[in-house]
Image (cartoon, rainbow, N blue to C red; front, top):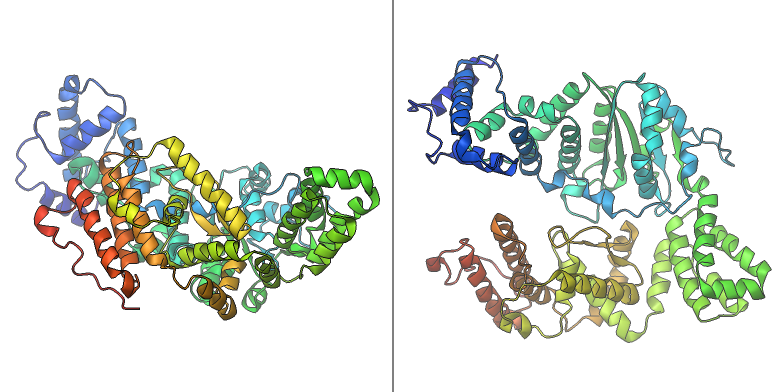
Length: 596
């Protein structure tokens, strides 16, 4: 039974309605039903008019009088549920960061689910934690030791559910995960991002909760075609609490939360959040660097120190990478003893930092392809510093002047860009002729061209930046591939004052903001033809906003060409109905621009 206030609110919306609208009448609810019914496979809509009238009339009556719950056809209910998840919680609810983390190398990290594994250093067995009542498990380790990769491995492994169901006595277990990411968007490093993502994942697995969670939104959309507003940050904690309680009636919950040290707020806030979860009998597997605040909070909890447990994994990765190289196979035929020892020497020097191993192996493979002598390879390995930031410095110092200047431009574009940098935007921003963006006619790009551009920018980043910037492996033209730092430590390194000075000296005449303005205009003019309707309108609007954001910081000497770009953006905005003709002159006049 709905509350009196809720009934009155609905009745107010029904004020003046004296009869159920005929199917041929154009009302928001009728239009919504027609759209969803058609999308759900009810193609003969005209023959369903009587059913529509009966369904709508009885539903209005039940809602207005508070008698029972609405009965919604399954096809429509499913559409509304998906609309709620995507519209109310937004794309930030999806666990996008997880897809950007590298998959664990084959046969690595399998020890985490091995109950009988022997280790040189003591650690609390993860399987025992899964099966027993202890609620928090802490995975810690050095920067670059592989914590995020391990957390992704755990969250996706079928053994996780198997062992958790021992704890739940066979009851269902709902698993959700979140990866804080300081180098990503502000949302990815915030409490709001955490709550929004967890809420999305829990509701996606328990969609029957949605009407209870937001009854007015649910009923308003179904009955009247009212838009679903995105949940505001202040409401997320309350909604997540309600959802956790509802899920808990039929299921146990386990959360995988990575990167506590990458949270954008205070450590006290993120620790309070973890404690709030465990106080509701939720299992939490959390990962972070070994900061003092986390050590003090988790010192009595089951835990593991990752660099103490991954030596065999690093040797497996190194040997696998070397065995796949023809140069190494030639070396092994000539010098089998040294070839066997090389992987061990690499792992010894890595001191538990998996990322260091990956970068060094990549460097050594270059020498192997050139048939370096044993002394050359050993000298190359000895010269590489064991500290990650020092290793980045050593890598950059090996670049020739041309590649360093080009890499510096990429780093400056990444730093200048606000939000997620799409690989195609970086490709277009790499253009040497800015006037092309202004002069080019509208020409939709084909999928083959998109794939070619993506492949080109991947190769350029790999050759110029040596993998310090990379294109993530997921995405398409509708969900583009982001360009990300290889690791948070890369971003930290590039922020150092001495490194910034070198990058700026190499890009003195390069204006990354102007390049980004041109790139966004080019992306609008070449938008794929299969992006249509509302998706096209939204995409063009967002890309126009990208022009505006970058235009604010364009150097004073480039103002004239920047204004030409802004003027060109007005045409597609007008065509899509975002701007009206009287607003075009100039549409960007209220913006504030820099004078640097």
